[in-house]
View 1 (cartoon, helix red, strand yellow):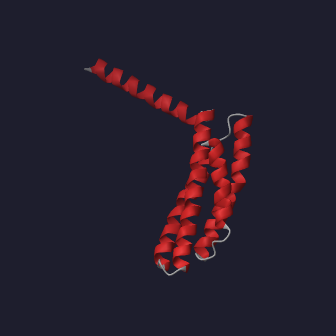
View 2 (tube, one colour; view 1 turned 45 degrees about the horizontal axis):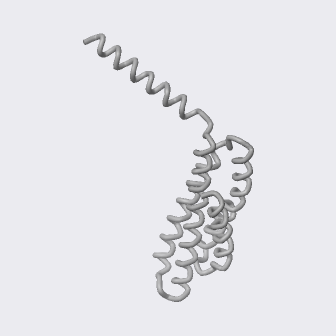
View 3 (cartoon, helix red, strand yellow; view 1 turned 90 degrees about the horizontal axis):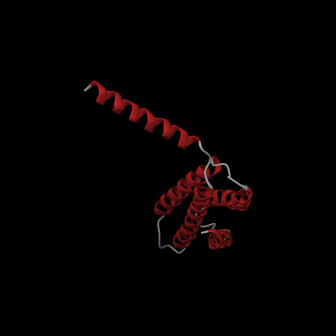
Length: 141
């Protein structure tokens, strides 16, 4: 019985040690690229939703409360994925270039979503940014 407890304890410590080791390792290219694409997709979707919701509100087909809830959710999801990407160091020069291309788009997306939350009908700046994110996704997704 005691031997079984020792074996289980050693196995548990080994698993915890590996988990700690794996969590401190920098991301590989694939993980970094996937995280970047997820952040771009989240921003793209939130901007597209904000635009459609703003049009619906402006045209009287949606209530302000409904649009506010949509914008709040999209902004929170986008901010979370942007923060996740910001925490990851790029593993090589190519991924650094990808990050440097995407970071200004994500920063602008969070700003535009904040602007849309303040005035949901002020949506004219959203489609061009959505298109730039779509172009990024076409290249990297």
